[in-house]
Image (cartoon, rainbow, N blue to C red):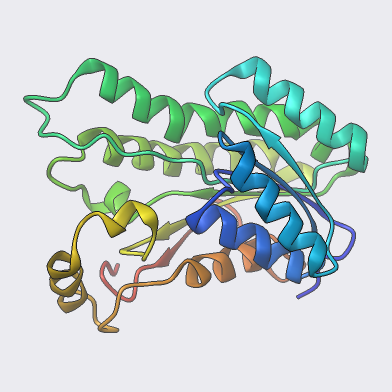
Length: 247
């Protein structure tokens, strides 16, 4: 599964799933353009990639800011000549019951998790159309498929990503550009670490495979969808949830 010669733009790449995706894509031969808010963490990731013999560049940006997104993607194309793969991974949570949820928390989650994917997709599409090859992978969530109490904003944003994925797949399919989504279940990340050990143990009991997932589990699915092996898959949601949700 070679991605040699491909350039991948990964958002939310400073930690967790995004970081794992960048490392996996590099391992498959791609150049990684990593983006997130924290320059220091991005620089550490780039150093790690270069030390392993790969190529990478970092851009600190706010994915909800249209001008910053345009500037970063233009700079990436100027540096590497193109963007072949886009991984829309940036995401946040602001959990609260819907009756008590502040409008600011609703807006922040929708803008970061959903609007950013629209902005980044729009920014890289011309590069993909020009070369008649592209892979867009959106990181959604099992909770965008089944909902979750206390996460109306998060679930809505992730469900929206699924709809966006299918619309883009229909729009760009004739240009040999695929758009798919990966829907992780419970994954060990900094975001889930705060939930506590008891919560994680209870979660594992709901999962047929009997364990929570790893960031590498998700990254492997992303790398597959970014490859030529997945060239006849588009508009699809690939569940990486240990069997937590079926059907």
